[in-house]
Image 1 (cartoon, rainbow, N blue to C red):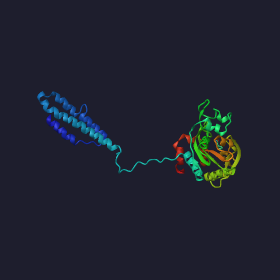
Image 2: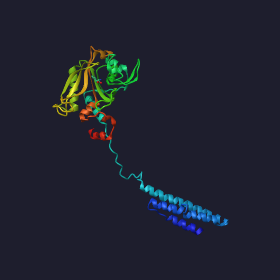
Image 3: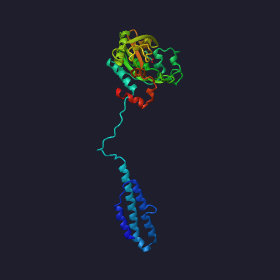
Image 4: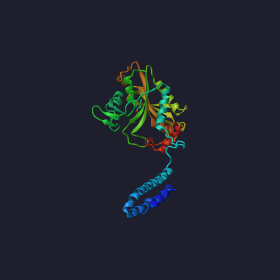
Length: 339
Ligand code: PHE
């Protein structure tokens, strides 16, 4: 029996397996229930007690060696199949490139255009109080925008807390905290209680601007808007201003740009008018200036506000607003080259 054990030990040393199946077959042959080592243990039970002492130890050593060897055959094969993790000489796995979200790209472009003419950035909270969103901006108490149908309230009552419906709230914060001259641009997320559709969403992004100094006129406003429109949509772009109403500006206007798709001839995008509406604007109402402790006799100013999604839709002719919020990579990947 001793001879047999020695023989098997030698055989064990030269054991190889080409694949996992072979390794498994060897495991069964050696240490399986009907394997040769199990058979030796059965034989061991039958031998005389005085010989057991000399044979037990080598037999156990054989069993351990066999277990170790068969395990190492197995692990060598599984490691071969898996890629070697820390081989730094291998070429790297290519990472797919990400891209900026189209809304971020357009927002950055809008900010950059105004930054060139001296506007600085101002930001404020998305969760606001009634004062900064409505009261300081001359909204009469019965104005429909204050209604629950239009505004998301976090808390109602005497001191309502709400989600801002426009970033004009940031302009109030700036006017309250710094004296003129003021020239700021306020980008941010805004919230309105609207049913989600291709043309409306309950969350969207705005960029609003405010310019206050001595002798700021409506002509300055027109020039600022024209400059922006040409930088954004091309140098041949024309603008037109239509009278409008906002509680915080007087006079107020809506700005249209000549349709950059049909060049003003009329198409489906501009609904055959040749014009596309892009923003609201106006001269800051003297009441608003006074409320924010700015002397309306000395200072005048203008403000404007636009939706980032609207500008992005016109720039890329995307018809459905919801695409900007779904984060479908098939949509987003198309903007990879626009940065
Ligand atoms: N705050 C207005 C809106 O959300 C836009 C606006 C800003 C209009 C500034 C005039 C002046 O619709």
